[in-house]
Length: 393
Image 1 (cartoon, rainbow, N blue to C red):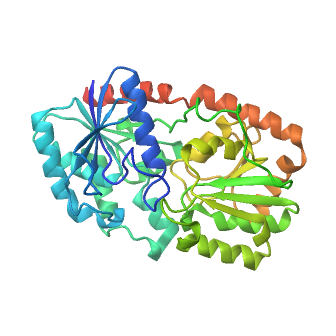
Image 2: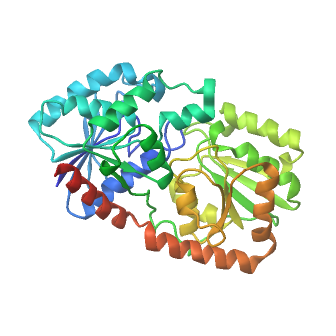
């Protein structure tokens, strides 16, 4: 099958750690690689955000990345990209007229908008993965939500017009139903994890002698890192490693990092909060292996990739009971889900794994087994092809 993936702001070959670079980049890259391994031809279309990028680049995994001219060839925050989606769609239409794909898979709502416009006059089915829904973002961020005002209605329109929707978790199915998206076109296919890269065997990062908790991801307020920092007040002898920061420059240059430093100082735990900045992808397994537990306390989380990576490394996970993490973390088996992630509740959930090494070992082993059984990218790719075939029919 010839597959056109559209990921307008999240390139699969981008440097990770920036404001708009995170789980979607990983998802697109790993899914494209797995589909390529299974014999499919994959082209990923993403907006050119640097003038020095070649139009077409072959990724090491064998799929193609096509940089589409749409707006300035520089960084534009994703919430400011909507005015450029018309140009993005026009370029997609020209490219697809010359080389028609069998199916288009749009990642994020603006990609869906551009894909549907580009496919409007062609017999080309479009499958949509939202990755994050405007209704959920608006609910949690309120007036702080910087999405375009038209996002909610446009997401409804995309759900009505596309041939199929791939939801990444069960929680999203209910949200889509509330948007009047036809349930018959919705398939639940979770994110996956690279089980070879993330595994329990191998070196672990250096320890200081304290018990250790690790959190990882982009430094944005919705990730709830401040909750994990405040939880240290009730966890004596425990340090928190915050693996995340800007793609370039020192972590101290990041506004959210500075805010988190102030939170740690006000909580009296600054000496136990380690902020190494962005940790390269190849070094993350060792970072996870160095931990007694990994904590993820976002306000909402459509992905839950970090819990999967930690589980694949055999580390217990304490996570907010939101979004994809409700599916990936088996409460009481591979870790603990916290319905109300207050600092006190998070500390209480972490304490058993910090104090009982045998419990941590059993829980980590269960996490590895669950990751292998349900979340390999090859299995996710096979399910995705079934969704493509259903949408195409």
